[in-house]
Length: 96
Image 1: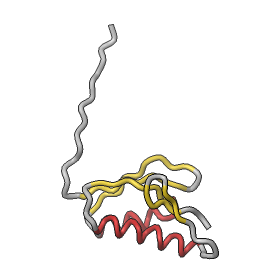
Image 2 (image 1 turned 120 degrees about the vertical axis):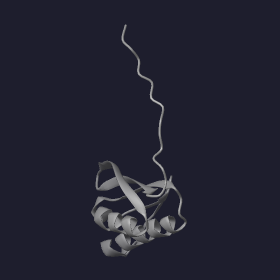
Image 3 (image 1 turned 90 degrees about the horizontal axis):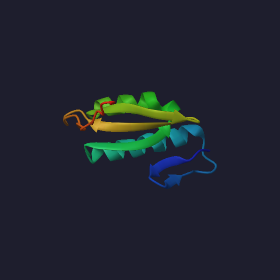
């Protein structure tokens, strides 16, 4: 049994259920979020679910970007492929 990330500060767990059930719930949550078509969202998922999450993202028009991974969890950001890249202004500081 593991915790499933639902939202910031909110995790679910299903005592008595196996790992496959947890994987299905986790992918189901991602699919439901993608169905709402936000331009971008970030979640922590089981590292074992990355391949399935990536395949689902492609079918639903998202790009999956992997972030930091630790202790069996990976932070993923999903972005709509149709949305333009988010640009950030970066200052460079000249050393004097």
